[in-house]
Length: 399
Image 1 (tube, one colour):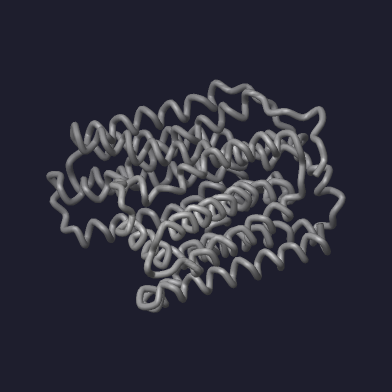
Image 2: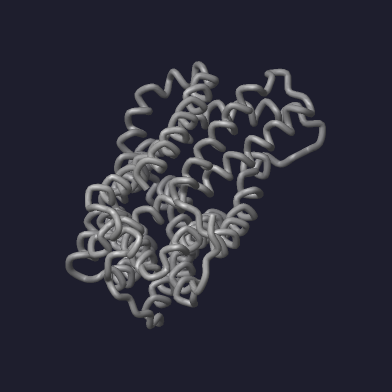
């Protein structure tokens, strides 16, 4: 770990991070309202059909991002694609207010197209702000990651609450105006970016840079898939402990304990990684080993919960959040560090493709996880441990 000198964040970092916060607020607010709107509003769509439409929408976003990234890198430029994407999503939110199937599908289509242009190009443009300050990449994407989490939290609470309390149209209209502001911020920003290969990445061969990007993408994919695999076992342990706690704790708080650890950890990481530089693959190693210890602790919690079970569970949650902080934002940092900046949005758009494919594969075994939740925990512990050790060996050899 070395001290970072003569490099610092500037206002453009927070301008684009704030834009992303607002965009995620609107997007997750719309998503949270969507199924209830389709079922309970004048559309009166059967719940099963509404869930199918929702599933189609959330799955198609990944492929829309590939199209949007191509448009951004090859035609519009990343910043223009961000602005156009934000405006398109805003129009889509307003169109959802039309109480008809045509309004529903047109609105969702516009949001899909807009999100596809906005998300990968925002991440790419944000990364390009640091082409000459690569030691701050980890801290920068951790800032962006924290703002995304804040946006998701605001969207699922504030916009959803307003939509449910005052009417769906109020929720969609508010989301539309929030999205407009998210598009306005990049318009007001006057940053200058020079596209050039990063100095650190330039020391490596094209093959080494390629493998670093692929390795980072796959590492992130396996983390989120293993995160999903352990969720059933984790939920069962949470429920078991909640039933034995003598004091009254709201379920909404108990099942979102991670947020109480996540934001302080993100702030600490931002400060630490702004002052000191450490190789990204070392951070990934710490992340996966923390994840392995976290899940391993869950396996040690006895079925007959007691006071020690609560302490062990809280330690597990803390370690899992440490893992997420060391993996989530670092994947974007690795991609920016080693990918060709001219095609950065395209590479960013591909990050969640292997994750989605692996999720489909995991879905075939979902019944096994439900019948034996501890099996998922065992697989998660072993998987995280192997990946942590594998990344440690890889960074020693290649980076």
